[in-house]
Amino acid sequence: MLSDQEFNRIGWASRRGMLELDLILVPFVEQRLRNLDADDLQRYLDLLESEDNDLFAWFLGRGKPEDNELAIIVNKIIAHVRPA
Image (cartoon, one colour):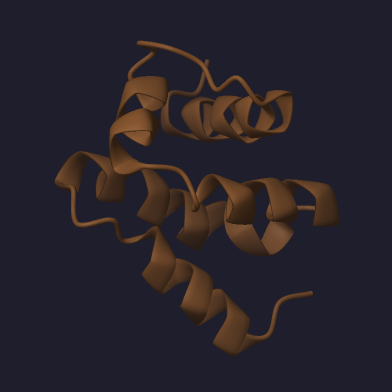
């Protein structure tokens, strides 16, 4: 379980300075982060180490992460933004 301090730190790191990414990542953090299991939380933290241009391309479907673990969390974020 995340402490409020950890949640706030991750939330701050999710604000990328690119509006398009903020519109995807911030709602995901606010609505889903506390409910992620340990594996998905680690995937999300690893995702935050990625370059903004890569994140942008992945979320727009213009590519996929080479790392399968990152691909899992990218797909979950996309599903959150664009529910079926």
